[in-house]
Image (cartoon, rainbow, N blue to C red; front, side):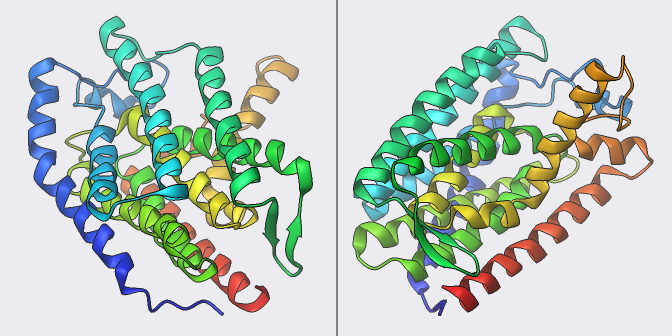
Length: 326
């Protein structure tokens, strides 16, 4: 059974929330002074042109808030390893954002450069988990199943898929941060309930800190956004979600908890495949999926609310599966 009486999870949540609230205005002013503004896609929705030059790289405050929690609560062992991997993904995103700003274009690192960095971090994390945490994974309706040596490629796929899904989903004001807030709370509950011992409970605290940082960031990122998280934030958050779920042995619940990230990735794959195989014909008005809804006439706040509600329901379903079949 899941035991939600873990009050210690509230402390990193609240601290990360407060750190974002306090440092947010300073980071926004700094980005404005440095002229670190968003570079909007030329082929994106016309309504997004007004977002040109809105400060970006706001993910710095999210990563900072999580690191402050790690220092205050003394993260060690698996939680510290997960934090370092999260920062690593944030650094890849930072380089991507920085190149976009310097070159004044909507594309930063080349695709192969980003995937090499993501691949290397995923490999290190997956091997660490295989050796130090174990290769068993919770399978709904079955229980824990040992993946053996196949755990490493499985874990790598999970990390890279969720990280890129988060990156693709970061296209509307408050969208990625709202979904990650819900996912972070859910994973914190799961991790705290599955694990025993200081090192393991800290994975739950890390996830809770991530959720709190997202809530604080929403103060500045809700429509109309005063700052965007950029790839700095989206890659760091995607990595943190995937790694915390892996370390709590709940990776196979991610397709449920992150159903809208899955839909986002699938929409891009289908769109690209259709364009290449059907001689320029498209399935959606625009990919990722949230832009398709925008071009159908839905305001971005409506799309964000719809995605958030679906995420809440899907995370509740994941908790039910863990309760009934753990």
